[in-house]
Length: 463
Image 1 (cartoon, rainbow, N blue to C red):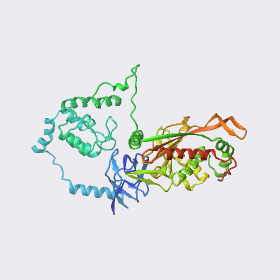
Image 2 (cartoon, one colour):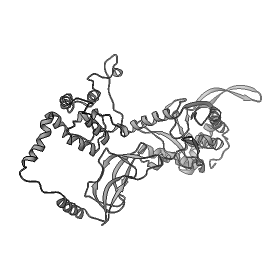
Image 3 (cartoon, rainbow, N blue to C red):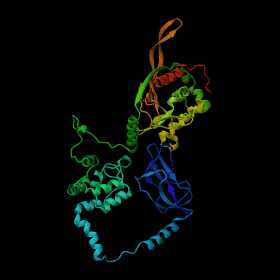
Image 4 (spheres, one colour):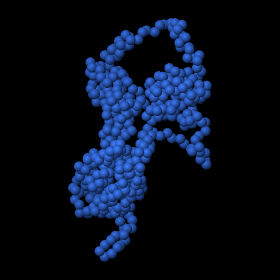
């Protein structure tokens, strides 16, 4: 039977690595083709990796919490094998490669085992045997790092004190070796030994303070009442935070605002939404109607449908429109309508409804959230009239849609100006000032407003 490696698959053009969140199958288990064997999480979405064919998962090469690069092996897999065959082969290989331990250890063995105990504090050595996959800070430790820590008698407290250079601050092999070669300067052996004994039973919020080498809360936590609660960011919130910081550090943001009179659009949608649902089986929200105007304006100003590559500006031919959506957890995700300019209103409504539903259900795949070239964000959903959105890198523009409100407005008529109640909304366009100047960025959002204001009340629903 052929034994192959199950590799971490490519999951979108901008995804380079993933975190192993859960191993779904035990080593040695029979697995059917396309059965999920592991859950992974990227900076964009959670997903699963399936088995390629019927067979046996021989050996895991990763552990939960590990960060793996695209193309790296996850597990050894025997195609067409059975668990009994795999176990017998594994036992045979083990018996051939591993000598039988002597029943009575000789003197050298005893000396080698007792030497580390004599050289270090007993408490620290005890703690080093309890290296867990994640510490009190929530940071994950790979099997290699945990193995080195156990062999060298590094306590969990000392491990938590090491500044990691890996993804999300994780400790790499290089980090722990440098820590050991520097004589454990991050924390003295005597203090770490006594402190580590206390850490094991310390509540999580308090451990954060211990790791920060302080028994007192950070000054920012203090309040008049003296009460506060420390809530650790979940994985997705940490990734969003890093993505936003990176965007602000990368792109000089400028935001232009336009107020649009969308009365005709609102009236048309209210008059036709029931017929639209009956005819096409899709709810008609304002999102596809506004998306249609954005797509038309991008056709007029293709420079906003771009990204930056060093000193080059990449103008994308296809319009892949991202639509920022809030998840039930409060986190944010941006599914993408691929080739949005190829859809009519019915097709856009179907795409919007499908992506929004699967986002709420947590069923989006990596392809659903990759490849966007421009993004819209509906801040009006939360009752906000306008916002200053942060660009979704590596794009160069994002449009925030404010709440539609009835307001008195001046209307120009042949008989003179009149004041009337109109449906008004603000559009906020943030753009990368490295490549999009005010003339282009401001003209683009004005063009979106023009298309919205020119919406015809006589438009057929098929249009």
